[in-house]
Amino acid sequence: MKTYQIEIQRVKAMANGNGLVEAQIDALVLPANTANLPEGRTPSTRLSMSEETARVLFLLLKQQLSEFDKRKGRSQR
Image 1 (cartoon, rainbow, N blue to C red):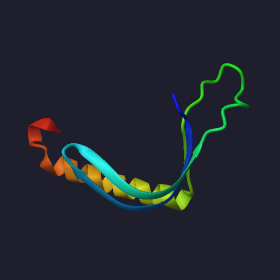
Image 2: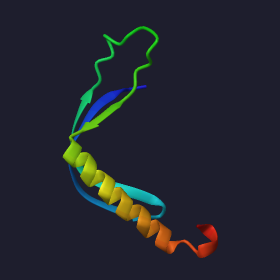
Image 3: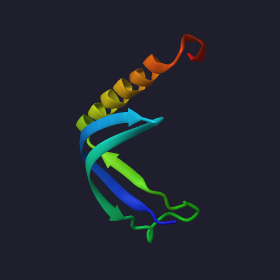
């Protein structure tokens, strides 16, 4: 499995359709340095962002999820 270090620099837009939420972002994507991992720790992809970007992402996700809820019938809530 390939692992990466992804730094989200800006969330430009979000939309949903067909059960998927898609985000248009500016990000720096680099291969992860797994050579100096502590023993027993499995390599994984790491996602990092500033607090400001995280707040924007949270608000946009909340908006997209509320749009999903609007489309559901009352019996599915």
